[in-house]
Length: 249
Image (cartoon, rainbow, N blue to C red; front, side, top):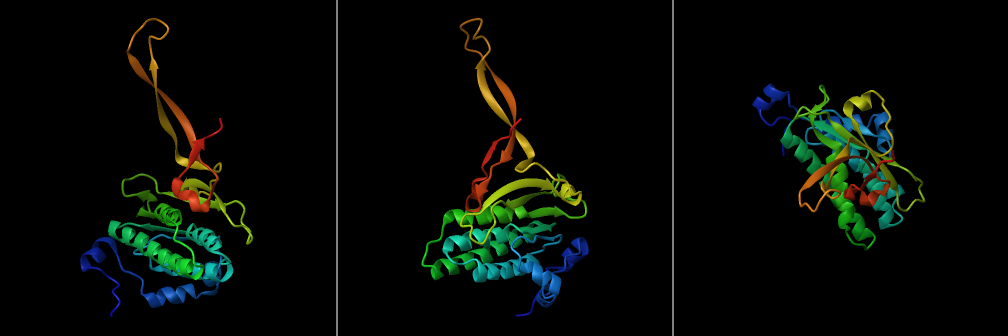
């Protein structure tokens, strides 16, 4: 079947959309520096024009092969290190349908590899592993414009840094500290407190009786309290929970 590198002439004219041929993807990933990086489970990649994920899927495939060869003594070890591989892949795509396809393609590849290892280890698929994979992929693949560093709604593009805390080959359960950065902050090499979120406060609505000290009244008002929140340190298999805690003042 002939490989399609354009969807329509209109999309080429309007958005400059041309997909990278598979042969070029393979040739680029064979370059010594990139080939070596694909063997690292902590080396990150950012694809500024992700399309349907040709590069990211190919890199993920190579990283998962590394996991299968080197971190596969048990299903639990594969689950932990395959999710770690996922955390290193980032993409930005302007067009919504492409961004959605990229996310689906990455998840499909992960699912197929996970299912293969479940059978190999005579284990069971864990919903929380798949849910964590979905959370990582959807957080790392963003719809927006790389040049303006903004999402389609005009707000800053936000990515999560997933920092492994106790990374050793003997580690059974990798702990992850998630911290959010805008693309501008990433390019500015700004470092944040671990766990910091981009929108790190929420409104806690507490009902209080305004006449408690004065009379027997039934009138209540809302007291709005701003609380600074941060992501908690959590095992990588549980990142789907998006657990937060109140930040220390």
